[in-house]
Length: 410
Image (cartoon, rainbow, N blue to C red; front, side, top):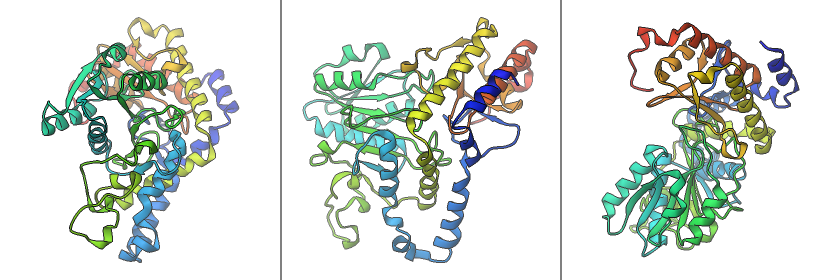
């Protein structure tokens, strides 16, 4: 291990946070942008929910352990991490389901406009949900229009109801200018919906201050809530009086246990809850979020930039860019918390890295992503990843025939 990496780790004021996570010995885990590592506190929390709350207290736990309010409690815990005042964030469902709710809200709020404007390069599920809504409502009421990222502002015509964007691109790690694009959408009379899947938990996000209308985010990436952890949604309080959503389930009713025949929406974000929440998974996310009480988002951002700087500089100084293309921006204000490399044999390279216990991921057709979580990644992790990457390329290990077949999940 280089003296530089060891010295940076020794000076790292956040280094002790790694002990809060369960990580296999000898493994460098650089895939927290896809699935966060397990916080040790989650194991005990889930054990308590299963063995004590469910096992011993059974159905009384809805009141005794406040299960019924868990979506709100977790939402309130998330709120300051994304720059939201109380009463605007709810933990529920998945990003896909929440996108459906909020896109329908936006179309209804912006009457007379029908276009959902999105970026070609964003994660496909966002467009899929918009397409499904369009098919359901009909193109006379709702239509998806996709453009290249550089053409967004020019495409904000007077028929755009809502601009839907992912703050950090899942493939390249490039960060949009949230303030500039939110202002441009509003100037054109459109609402804006931000997908925070690859930014929440590692970047300072100021939804209220930036005037964002709507947002969704992920619980299982940088928030470390576990596989399939519930997502969250944000609705700016200025829209609460008029906002409606189509999934009018019983827990979004103003008095769910009255069991009334007809639906009457609860106030605020509460009516965005539809069905009964998954208590075990939500309890896991709730416990995982406690880690963030020990550190500020600004500190995490500072370390994230330092780690990704270190890694990019290592690639450059080793001459690896002769065969690899770094598609992640060098400028800090344009970068998330990952480094993405484009390479002809990206699948084989990703698998050779994983085989050498450097866990990364692959995105079709030719991208290897190195996701850095400042809560548990170190400069020594980045150094080992560079060493292994260089060895694989020099020896051609990634070209082995055993990497020719791909499994279902890539």
